[in-house]
Image (cartoon, rainbow, N blue to C red):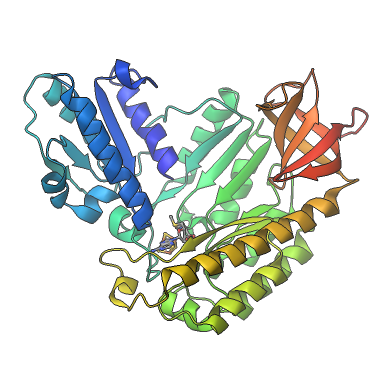
Length: 427
Ligand code: SAM
Ligand code: SF4
């Protein structure tokens, strides 16, 4: 979502005559888009601010602003901790940027302006300045109505706002006209999408039916809101890819309850069973948190065994990080760091083993690859993703970004499937 927000900001500014540069030396303005989900991300953004303030001091007239989740999370303290920071804007206030920057250019911007406006903003009127490539991101909603006890997202981004169906479809049509073959629908919990009498499965089908679209994926799906209709939509194929990010967070009922996730281990595994039955070959991925307050060895082993049982294609594991004003920040952060690290390593090993099992199961099979570009390490090869989301490398001198090729998997290397193009295959 943060990457998409940067594209929105670039869209706003390019519409006001600003030009994006990748060279810091050429820039007059630096905007830092911050994430506050974990302390580590916060610290990285705060250290970026200090580095950019040093850059600002080297020439008069330079401007440094902070965007994203940290402004609402930290508030006015930001300016005491980082004197010289010109302004800080929360994630719903990006439309205010041109005025702030014009004021700065006219020398009329007093330092230390915090704008944290939880408006009804959805940025529906805006054209993001997208990265080139084969994949375009489209937000279907902003904010989140859940209250996972560890999570600062609702505090920083506010409650959910769904974009109207027509607006999303028009954006997808524009994206296809610009030449992107794949769309990723984004929301903190897309499964709770509801607008104009349409739920997420309905929206997904409408997006998949837009002429010219080759592939559609989505994230993130909250397990408590994953309904049979969405599983059905996933089974229908076409442009809808058999690829689902379904964060479990923990395999222990006790911890799931303390996290306020709204489902049990059994309910989650029941969903996984239905998904495997209805969508053969679906690739599931997850997020998990280790060392949540009170997590015992037995709780952790429940997560480890759930990982083994599900057999994820990929996942992200995080050490619990207490975030200000969340419910879990009030609990005793009682799992020692070294225990968290050890649990994180074990879950990553389980992920690596299940990925290897899935990769090995694909050897000898034909997958459909959407080519993304040439391989950075092997210029005679192209890389792309299969419908399930696996990275695939294959030798070719006539495939280009956006092409779809059939490829037979011959082996694996780390995170990548090694394949040969099957020119006779009909896709
Ligand atoms: N809305 C999505 C969801 O429900 O999964 C994504 C939320 S968050 C941006 C991405 C991941 O960060 C979460 O799935 C969770 O695993 C992790 N996370 C969130 N808060 C955390 C915290 N306080 N400590 C450690 N990990 C956290
Ligand atoms: Fe955070 Fe939970 Fe909302 Fe995801 S669903 S953004 S983890 S509160």
